[in-house]
Amino acid sequence: MTVTNLKLKGQSAPAPAARVIAFTRSANVSSGQPLTARLVAAATNIMPLLVTLALILVAWQVACSAPDSSLPSPTRVIEESWELIAHPFYVGQGVDQGLFWHVAASLQRVALGYALAAVVGIALGALVGQSALAMRGLDPIFQVLRTVPPLAWLPLSLAAFQDGNPSAIFVIFITAIWPIIINTAVGIRNIPQDYQNVAKVLRLNTLEYFAKIMLPAAAPYIFTGLRIGIGLSWLAIVAAEMLIGGVGIGFFIWDAWNSSLISDIIVALLYVGIVGFLLDRLIALVGRVVTRGTATA
Image (tube, rainbow, N blue to C red):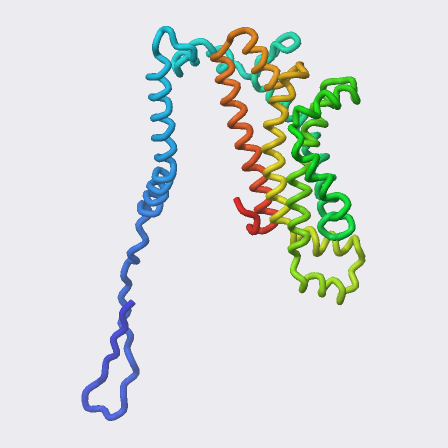
């Protein structure tokens, strides 16, 4: 916008200013530039991934294209397992199910075991982090038990529950609980002293202090433990299902191995990787929402 002040000749007093207004088009009005910039940014972010995947597929195809290769090439995987890829929702008899149902059965076990581990782990972590006496009594036991491999618990759980499904859930629970306990305890111990002073001034009781001070302050640490726990849970259920049988992605992989269906195993492994990635992203998203961005992505 331009403004020009005009004066009349022969008059001592200044004349009222006359404003000449000229409108100019803003340089950023163009509607095409923001959309183009967004497309370019999206392409810049995704291109490295696409190039990397293309290189991996080409290298895989070249390495496994020989007739005597023990592993199938990508084209051979698609050819041999097309029915499995194209019909993930297939419903058959017994364990003859599409991959979607195997993954869903595994996720159900993970959800139950992981939820129990989250509740118990946060409670025990808060106890250990808040009480020096509990720290001295429980922490050495936790440090010993967390080094036991997950599958080592499976025979004991089978003996206790006499059934494969609760045994697998227990393995998930015992696998996921340790990082949750440890990270929660670290978060509790790192609560600033000022927060504790405020709680004393406000005369908060134990429950109020836990809900209003302790959990919000330690939330970034807690969600770090929860993310580690969900990853370990997904790893453990695949291994456990190879032994307990029934419908599940782990049993599907083991059954495919016994039937020499290597291409089906590769397809199932892609499902395992994608689902594991999505579970981690889900917990990370919940953590960012709950902690208002203070939990790391």
